[in-house]
Amino acid sequence: MLFLYNLAIYIAGFFLRIIALFSPKIKLFIEGRKNVFSTLKEKIKAEDKTIWFHAASLGEYEQGLPVIEKIKEKYPLHKIIVTFFSPSGYEVRKNNTVADLTLYLPLDTKANAKKFIKLVHPEFAFFIKYEFWLNYLKELETNQIPTYLISGIFRDNQMFFKWYGGFYRKALKAFTYFFLQNEKSKQKVESLGFDNVIVSGDTRFDRVNAILERDNSLDFIENFKNNQPVIVIGSSWPKDEVILTEYINQASENVKFIIAPHNIKAEQIANLKSQITKSTILYSEKENKDLSEYNVLIIDTVGLLTKIYSYATIAYVGGGFGNPGIHNILEPATFGIPIVIGPNYSNFAEAVSLVELKGCNVISNSEELKNIFNKLLSDPIFFEEKSKINSSFIQNNKGATETIMKIVS
Figure 1 (cartoon, one colour):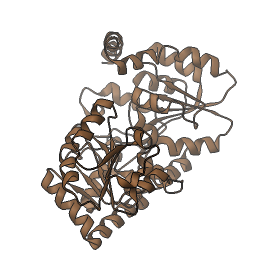
Figure 2 (figure 1 turned 45 degrees about the vertical axis):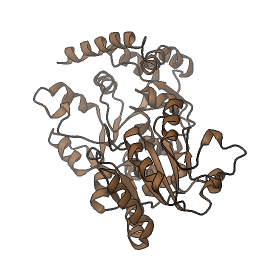
Figure 3 (figure 1 turned 90 degrees about the vertical axis):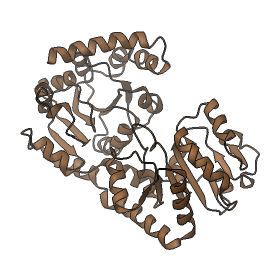
Figure 4 (figure 1 turned 180 degrees about the vertical axis):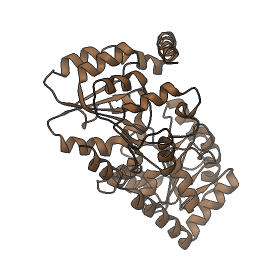
């Protein structure tokens, strides 16, 4: 089976080069990996001490960031190496300041894994949440490099728990310790015969809790809000926007809206704006404008949503009408904001928990959206209940980073 795995990696690499001719994203995936080894040879010396973190994409990077920061504090003389698999992670965070070197991870061939580990020679290695690259794990095990899985999740449908997944189960022996998000994952790993397992929780709670300690002020949002209630719509998709714009167009003039779409391509932004009958302005148009005169502000840039949530009266988090589902609900929750989402959330443990706690409301159509928004805006007791549930949820679940750091030597 391992032979088939390696064959699949080579075949995937071949076809990705062809697809790259037609796909800008896959082109980044291919082009970004061309100079990885030459960069490592240039930047990493034999005498350097290094620590390696691997994240699949942006979400996993943000999840692992509290641990990366603590490791950097504990080992200030080590070089921190961060790798990404996906362009959507690397292209956004390639200029981060916490890592000494940020790279794409070369495809998981035996030769690449051997060459990468030899050049990086990490003292420790961390995989964030998932992505179990078998040749890299084998090389780490062969070189006796302590390897940790942080904020890991295991589910029944993973290869480890299939009758034919023996070669995947064997790869897990590379891990010195499994730091997992929940008890169910712990039971799954223990069922495979491992006892080096602990439920540490999800480091994302530490990440979003830290947001409260930073400066989240944005003068232009202050001007736009003008002391009125604001519904912030974060990471919306067209399916979300169909019912949201219907509500916006009939909402009271006393309520304002900030929309931060997931896709900020000009064509999609223009289409969104055309659906709104209220006075609307784009972030890119805000210079020399009195934003307090507008009812709707569309954020046609990236990197501001977290701070914008701090100004929200209510947050709608998009993605719940499509696949794979909703975006990050922990960021608005940390500010103690009532949250509304679409129906596709079952694959996100934090969303399931918040829905069960009744801090997060699920809607399936425009009528349900109208009812919940209006109730939150008109019923202060109901509003306060939701707010307290969400802020308490973050506070009660933080601490995973501290648990991890107590064990990692």
